[in-house]
Length: 241
Length: 312
Image (cartoon, rainbow over all chains, first blue to last red; front, side, top):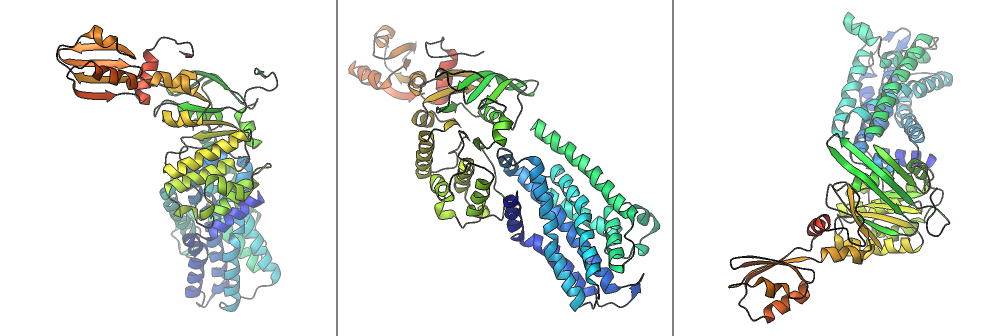
């Protein structure tokens, strides 16, 4: 499985579009907006944005490994080739999950460096570690969401579906615009989304507040629910194929 | 477990009364039965849509049969796949973008416990000069060679090749079959699907002919070819005499319609000189047949010959 993981990571990092998406895009947004002054709930704009962008990058990394990549490889027959090799479906998924989690690192490291150097965010090592832990565990439901997208859509469509899903999650979850600026109805919807819970956990971690068990439970529930959908689609595909 | 004539081990592939229905009206496999013994190189020959790919997918565990029994190396296909005992080259299949040829081969080797060396794989598949190339830059033929390398990575006991040479040029084809021969000599059992009789004849020790989801013949290449040697000669000659024409060597059938004559022969090379030796004026000569389609027609309409095993 280690060989498979290394292979997947190497080739993903060669995908320019993916690297721009998970590292270039959040870094650019950070450079543009982090200099705004102001604080909210004890956090500077630079710190708030650091978490938002890290969450965006983490979501993208998690969903790419199982989403558009899987959709394309299901379509072009690569998945069939893998199915006649000894790698089992659970090991394949474990590797994909690990891929999604490990590929959070480049974007996260870049953003932390920018946050400290450019945004003058001062975080104790413990809080950086807490944020990292929140991200690593918190993107698991997004890996599974990617799996659902990858199993439902075809190659090109999956890419669009992932983009749209991420934008909706980011806007309604309060990642791109402050949650309180959203119309009431959208806030109600937003509060149900995994992106909302993940970014809240991130902000709590950075602010040194209690993380919030409700947020963790919500993310757990999303992972389980999406996991069931993915399992159903996976079974459907392997038996009718 | 079924014992073969050596009494030692069972067949590499046991395909018993297998039916695969995709749609109530379409039987991709219609009660197909055959065994493949360890060490055999067998061609599954048939036109497009005959059921070859369905049969191979079933043997690889990619599809479950609607009914019947499939045993691979004495157990279910999934077990043989999980144990890394079989290699499969599917009819079509892309490769994962962003990977280099050498990386992909390296990965596949590591998925198996028993593995061939990277150098050997590069040589066998004829992709040594492409080792540093990204897979998305490969041509169709090069991709097909890569898929061959992947199928061999685990040093499989049993190798399935589904129309493996479709995208290859003449030189690559020759190299490919030389490699298959090498692997077969090392003891691997090989089953390949093709719709070219010539390919089956040149590279298999046994040919199973399938059409419309049924096995219509199963025998040595010589036995199968005897059925396909039939040629149809069409020509015009004034006042043809059927009895005279029937006496020509190889001729099995004569149809006369005015000046137009249709002759069926099992050996056109003998018939033609003898026909011209009659000294009759012969015009508009056409020689037809001999292809797989013709052979299938011949096989389907022929009575059960000594070597032909009909399954219905």
